[in-house]
Length: 104
Image 1 (cartoon, helix red, strand yellow):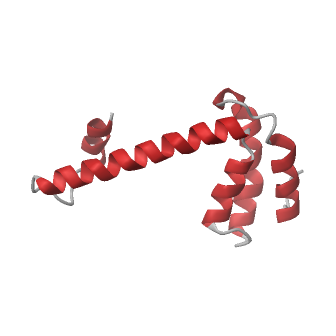
Image 2 (spheres, one colour):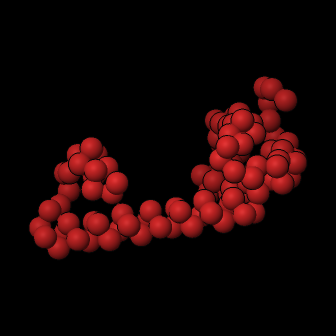
Image 3 (cartoon, helix red, strand yellow):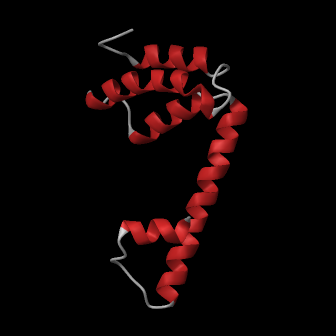
């Protein structure tokens, strides 16, 4: 489907694809979510939370669990690094390249 999308169309797509997207290697299938998500965002029909939720629902449950675990791990690493930097008096204006190297 091209052009106009509805939330119902997106729900159908999510239900159809969720059992087929087993790994990030199935990226072609993942990109099918981009058009409806972008369209619905441009029309203010989905909140940011709903867009993320629909995207994750479109993944196979095992892949979804792995993605969520990785996001939680990265989030916790970021929080711990910020706390460590603040503890040592480093605040605010570290450039993204330095932060990227710190978290690598």
